[in-house]
Image (cartoon, rainbow, N blue to C red; front, top):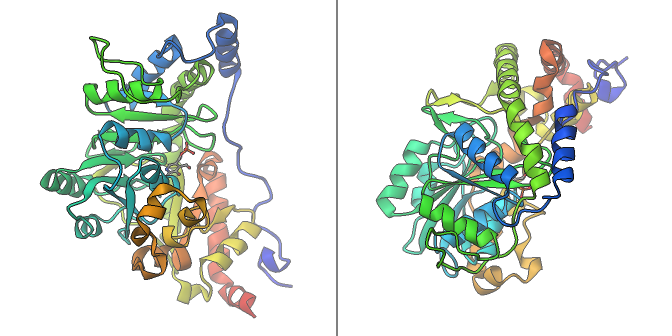
Length: 412
Ligand SMILES: Cc1ncc(COP(=O)(O)O)c(C=O)c1O
């Protein structure tokens, strides 16, 4: 009788991990109140819920001016447009992220220049960023993921030296802190997604955190059909209706109330997980930089030693998922990403500048290794099932380590 569940053995866990998003009567009442108020939409912008949400969001994420909008992709496009970045410009983005990080500059008319990650943190590698700078480079979009943050000291120094705009894609990093500074509040702009899987959600939505008030006015104008937002009311821009609705902002206000306790719970469970995981042979953790003073648990990642287990991460993830622990292999490298297919879309940027999209010539060894061999990704719900949920995860990984001969046989 095989031990591993993928081969017919008994799984470690049969109970599903908790669902997300969680809600209670507060959400229902907040939505009902907004519905009864008759003020559902976002115009005139900002509505009362949106204004309150913006203020509280900025306060909680570490300062600046928060402008809510329809999602966490348009946030980055709008940031670039507000900064005057567009046609013919280059924007540096990491190769390990959701397609949105590269699609946003393209939508703004700029070419994404795809760079490698730091193998210890899986976040944007500052040395690769610096090596990719040309006279056309105007901005860097860094991505904080895997419960890590990009080295913001290095990025800000590079940006200052080369006079570049910094956008922090913080879709995975609500509440994280680098030397006590909030993720998204360090660069010129912080982009947040409020999509339903995220640790702060309004169903769909996004927030752009702007360091500069003037820039926040321009951003607010772009997302409100170009209506002027400067105190004199004269600076019209080109814009569209990209506003968050008052119903979504009502949900956001309740989500912010719940956020700190949920954040602490996940962080405590992640510490507990790492104690257990670090004792298992063949497993290694991403490195924890001491400057990452608070980490945000959205998607957690550890690494496997493929030689020890006799399999790469795809079979490891299938086997662990069969044990009742839902894990996956995470993002492909951007140059292999099915969702990132600019050539198929006849978008202006890839048509005009095909040289930025020659994927098979890109050398991205760190992201290739992470995405094809060693990374094991899991969702935030694993950190909301108490120590019992974490114990099951540890037991599942240990079981795979102890039965790695069975695991390696999966290839046969
Ligand atoms: C890293 C990253 N950036 C941006 C986004 C885009 O967010 P949205 O779906 O709200 O547009 C996501 C969404 O999952 C993401 O994971």
